[in-house]
Length: 337
Image 1: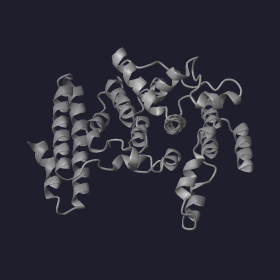
Image 2: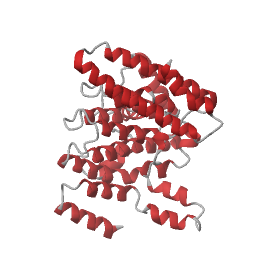
Image 3: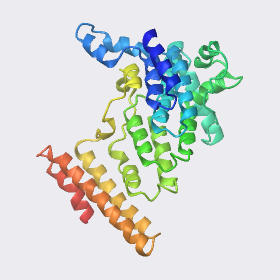
Image 4: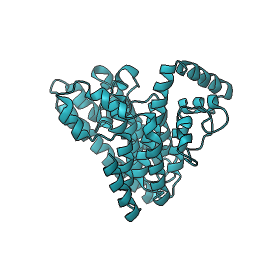
């Protein structure tokens, strides 16, 4: 471990503008054992999953965070660094929640959050990301929630459980000039959150969707609007028993392709597809009503292409099940009215 870290640190000194080096070093802090090593020992070690989960601990997070924040200082608009940093902060919140659950204080904190939201009308807190100033010795105290981000550890715990830290980081990244209209960055975040084992999943996804529909450079983007409208097909409700089973592994190595897993099945899937298609048609009418002339024609052509691709994609997906003829025909029939 020390040899690898030393080589990565020296490489960063020589190439401070290479984002992959910051990411590799931060991941090595979080999970010293590479995935290939875990796979090779899985057959002989029945507890590989649980042991690998233990490598993602609160004690591993401060140096990983400092590494990514240093990278963002040099490369403040790099989407890869932002995704890794956001992933780390979500992981930190979940690690704290597990620790507080063991200590028996999580229920009390969550009740406090609910009470605060009711009193404040859902406003929430304002919280700045960790600055990581000072000595490393302070990190352990901050990571347990005692005195974190202020004099009151209780207030900090409420903010963390409520997701205000991650939401602040998200909004800060959206405000960066180079990421302000970056749809690819937001699509990566959606893929990340849909497969992340966190109780903040719905809140984080809604934050991304809201930004996509409000950002001047994205709110009329056809793909952005389609992704938001079809989210009901893919957004899964967080289930602690399922999602936290391999929380340590998933926080470091999220499940690939999670954003393409359908969240509904059977008749419910047909109903959701019907709602999505109707929403697409209504959305088309709303946007076209705001445009005139050539701008309207260009947007209509782009929208028809996006919706056409959507219908073909679903037709190909449904064709895998020959018995699902209703679902196969539903998108096209509903769109044609």
